[in-house]
Length: 271
Image (cartoon, rainbow, N blue to C red; front, side, top):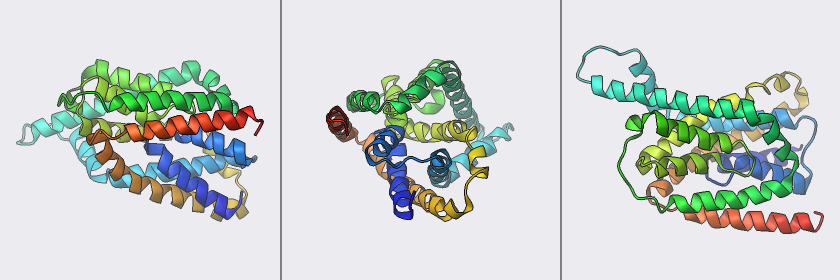
């Protein structure tokens, strides 16, 4: 892993973590075609995910602060309804995350096998294209995320659980499931981003120990990937939210289909 490769992979991670094209699927395919993997790869991927996690925390810092304040504000004040809705939203995020966690515990080992199967990852990218494409055709119903109810939260968590598979986009699946259950587009976008916080943390929690064994001479290289992932991720969030609200995610579907087909062709030629 050299400095330039770290920057490029950081940008790739930052862009694909949030836009509905599957960051994990892209990393699997890029590493397969360009032979970028090494025995320190897990630690590097943790750095990349921490970069995108920081991007969400910084971008939604005001929202997160409001949610945190509502947890400790139960008084009968003029803002009690706002605090109630914020606490509802926190409860739904916990439910969605719990369902995803159950799926990971039951099927996580099976899903891990797919990371060694670039051909299957390419096929799953085609499926992501279909998922993203249909998201633009759900009608706006105006249901706020704070009133989604437990069942909708469980279904969104199910969608995120399926997206553990590399090639299936986490953001694309959670956004599509949200829209399909009637949640308004702006809230569907925000909910997906907020839901990524525990998802990214949980996905990398068991791998943090790899950082302790990191060769110190690689630290600056990995930090370059971290910074690149943070900057790219932060910049893409606002753009993606506007595209979700404007029903323009279908353009990512065409990209997923093209990337999936091209990867299958290359793999069939033994590349």
